[in-house]
Image (cartoon, rainbow, N blue to C red):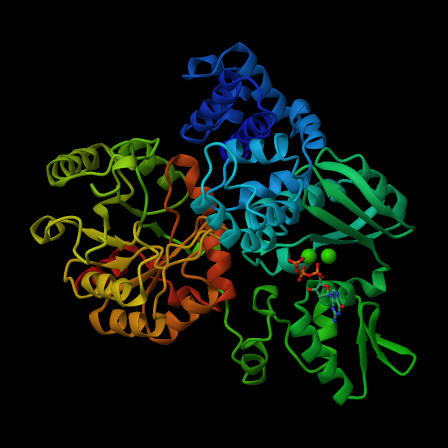
Length: 570
Ligand code: DGT
Ligand code: CA
Ligand code: CA
């Protein structure tokens, strides 16, 4: 279990306790534990397995150490499960409203007895919120503006949550002797940024054994429906999962059907029809005769198509590429050789320069850039020119003791609201690698946002635009960017584009990454690591690149260090 997953459990605990107006000291203790866990470089699980004492960490006493152990060993937290039963889901959903935290939710729930987003909306429309102590018309208006987005976001979870749960269940099902094949299908297999629910398919000599395992699985909160070969469960994370046990001869057809997307499948079915065939989740049929269905390859072959990677199945460009025999060989995690966006203790990271470099090396990377924040990001302890120069000096010194990996002196430099760079040109000129980013003022009108981006793109020292839109998946819209204009300018000025691999960002998204590729812009997939475990997110960035149809050749940080260096000259 990753530190971030453990931390998320304690944050949720704190949220639910705060909604219940529990002792503020307890709430604060859980929040502080969560922060400590997520900002600790070493894995809590590894520490525990090595018999280390977790009370060595600030804010973690005996009782919390015991609870962390419980979470790591069982994958859940008993009290949290109880709290989840006490606080209605509709109340928890209120937390998704931008600008609404547990304190406000506690008032809505305890004072106004509101239990759903609909009830909250009605109360806001009736002016009941503005009448509350400590609230005003402005707060009420803000809630009304954001509430619909929250309702929508509430239904989907991040690919990281979905994929982690799916892979755990698939692995456990595969352990059963009665189970032969298992895979996740649906949006999770297509690696969409968010998933509405999980779809798992299996073949089994005894379907009951598979369903019994799922019913008793530690991730499962309750069984919503159970039939002979199909069941639906709700996970503690509130994500729901369908398990379907299908016959061997239908496994490929079911995989094809339930992987989707719906839009992709419509085209496949039409192609079959044109050939006098019928495709459904049981197989491919000519009249009553089944001609394919045991494997997905067979299904595609029957309709005259090569096997199409799931990430491309959105009816965007995959059929055209397949018809032309040009389906790309998609980039893989193992192709990535360098990571060019990460933080250290110099700003808001948890690892030192050497720790980050060693961790990157252990993962097979051969070059990295250390890119701490610039001064505008004061809450992340951003660096001014004096501290930055000293930090770079430390990086140069660290290089002496680090072998087998190149370490670049980089900076994640803010593009300020007034369309100037947060650091002067003479400082940026000294960097090996400059990422320019928008962090603040994302709500500015498009004209000003574009002016800011152009400042960065036309600055001769800027190598790349990091997380270009600044969006947070499901939570915050990105800046209003004229993407085509920005990408053309970047292409003209030799500026690269980032796919930020953090599952909360995944920005550029698939569509814009494909657009950047079409303009010949080198794309860099970066982890934006804030600790040595941060590199784990690389797979999500690679998935996003795959959805964009990118090959190894389209992604600059798959190049060897020797080749990559040539891109640094502008
Ligand atoms: P999600 O769960 O909203 O993230 O998205 P999906 O793609 O996983 O959608 P889901 O779970 O509703 O269904 C899984 C796949 O099953 C979907 O991608 C295509 C297929 N499917 C489901 N319902 C239908 C349907 O009514 N018609 C067709 N053609 N395919 C369907
Ligand atoms: Ca699904
Ligand atoms: Ca489903």
